[in-house]
Length: 176
Image 1 (cartoon, rainbow, N blue to C red):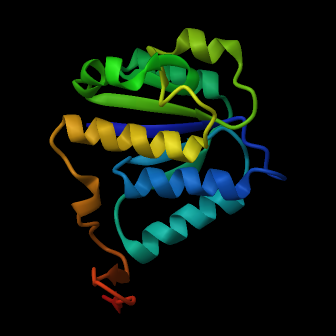
Image 2 (image 1 turned 135 degrees about the horizontal axis):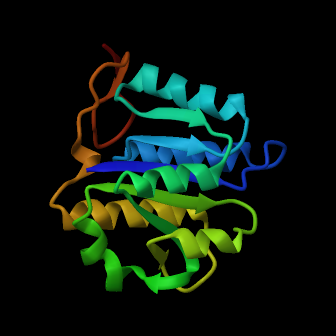
Image 3 (image 1 turned 45 degrees about the vertical axis):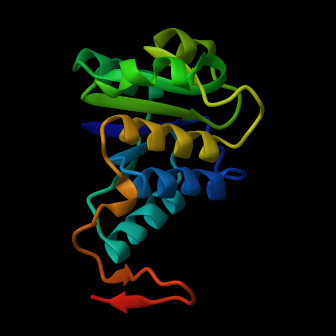
């Protein structure tokens, strides 16, 4: 399964921390990469540095047009999931989504343009209350992988210089 996050509406002067956390959550929970529909080298560099230090094949890059990315994804046979409070309830559509092999997950920052709702194959609500896009993404990815019998939290990430060893108390970080 290929999973790519498309972050739209990012405002460099305001959203750097949240967008970086969207990328970190995506990486930790099994996405292959993140496309940022904005030119923010700081976010891209941060995600690339984490991948270099901690391993894995996660990519992050800026794109010029979110519309073009969605159109290209769908023309290649991929499906688009837009995470929104106003969509179908996640438990009602996760079975259908989980059988797809190529998924783009759209995560908005500021108000999402109506075109996104029309272009998406699914508009999915993770709960019906206001919450963080990071929390919505995390819950969605966890449920998606669980339906496929996978646990990204146990996945080893090849490469990298650092590794955490689970322990009851304290912190054990090893240089590889």
